Amino acid sequence: MVNSGQVNGDKENLSSAQTSFNSTVDGLSGSWQGPSYDSLTSQAKSFSEDLFPTINSQMEAFANACDLYEDYEKLKKELASAEDSLSTARSNAKAAEEATGKYDGSIVSSWVRKIRELNAEKERLKSDINAALVKAAGNEITATALAETDFSGGAMSLYNSKVSADSSTIASSSVTENSTGTGAVQQRAIDWATSIANNDNYGYTNDKSSNSLGYDCSGLVLQAYENAGVGVKEAGASSTKNMKSALLKTGFEFVSGTPNVNNLQPGDILWKNGHTEMYVGNGQMVGAHENKDGRQGDSSGNEINVSPYKDKSWEGYFRYIG
Image 1 (cartoon, rainbow, N blue to C red):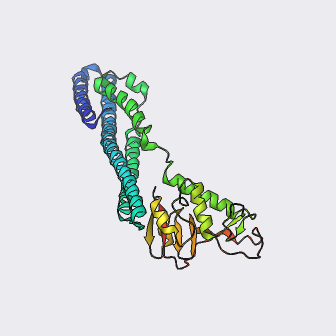
Image 2: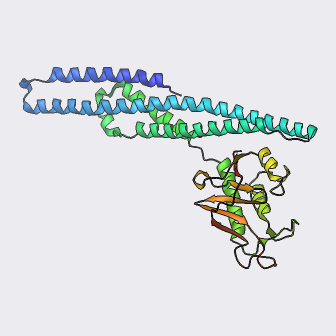
Image 3: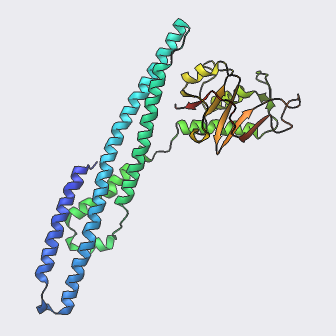
């Protein structure tokens, strides 16, 4: 793939081509040719003054996109290495827990934070690359105009072929990939939990048996993430009392303290000892509360429902990082 050094070299060739063209036009000017001819040469120079700076600006933007893409590829490797380290840290913590009966998630949490930072940087680079590509292609010069312009020269042709090939390479790469990672997991959990809330066949129940048509607060939230592909129950989560250690083992981080709703993200699990709900976005949360009538199902529509966010003295929240 072309790099910024090659593009900058083409810029120098383009500058030389412009100088040569203007010199040639100046040599052809002269009153002896008559006003009409002078008008044509003036138009040619005006076209040159518009054309070359436009292409130069596009080439600068494309050179910037190339540099950013190299940074992006390096960051992807760093992220992959960090994910391997996180996997190793989780395995070591699990082995230590089996040996000592105590789970120490400090190293796991540090790698989770590192991965979150790298993912944030990855998103920033993706945005910057796409913006540079848009700028590189923003000022269109028609193929007809280029084809009819003899002075376009090798540099112009070379640049346009590289932009066509390499813009496609960058744009079709993982820079524009559709995420199937943490965002998709959280959305699947939200979709499942809200579908249960909207189905009045399901009500609040403490019955944990598989044939029970309902959920308590932790059962709803934990099953939502189970259905989204996160093995929280396998890790030992079954209630608000034991879910914290299990969630930390399965890709969640814990943020302590009463959350500000403006800082919450869809899929965050609101938690305190004794109750839990899931934030679903737009200032709303989904949760299971209490059995209103002592019967199966949700005759009131409020046993399991989506409701405005409330501060229920939450002790913190869990966020899925992956």
